[in-house]
Length: 193
Image (tube, rainbow, N blue to C red):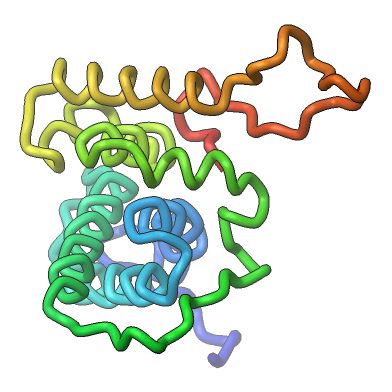
C-alpha cells in the first residue's frame, strides 16, 4: 500500500481499513464463539469483512458499525453451520487441533467448552451481548425474539456458565492447598475474552 496517499473516506467516514482494525477482534470472537476455534470461524470472519466492504459505501453515516458487523458475522456463521450440515466428514479424519494463536480455547478451555454447551439461544445471546457488545434490542433482532427474551436468555446463559464453572470445594484453595486455575466470568458486557 502506498502510504503517501491520503486515506480514502466514504461519506465522511473513516476508511474501511480502520473499521477492520477497530472491530476485527470483536468480529473474530463472535465467529469463534458461534462456530468454535476452527478454520470455519476464520473463514466466516473473512466473509464478514468481504460482505461489509461491498456494502460499506451504502452504509448510513450514523449507523452503529459494530452492531452492523456483528449482524453480518452472525449471518455468515449461520451460513457456515448450514454448509457444515451438508458436508460429509470422513470417519478416519482426525479432529482439527486448536491453534495456539488467537484461540479462545487456549486461555480458558473450561469457559469456552461450557459456552459451546449452552442451548443455542442462550449461547447466541451471551456471545452477541457480552462478546459482541450489542444491546439486547440488537441481540433480539438477531436471535428472533423480544428484547426481554434476549435479556433473559443471556442472564440464564451466564448463570449456567457460573454454575458449571463454580468450584465444588468450599474455598479458593483445593485440597492440596493450591489455588484453583479457573475462568472468571465478567459481570459487564464486552469483557469476555
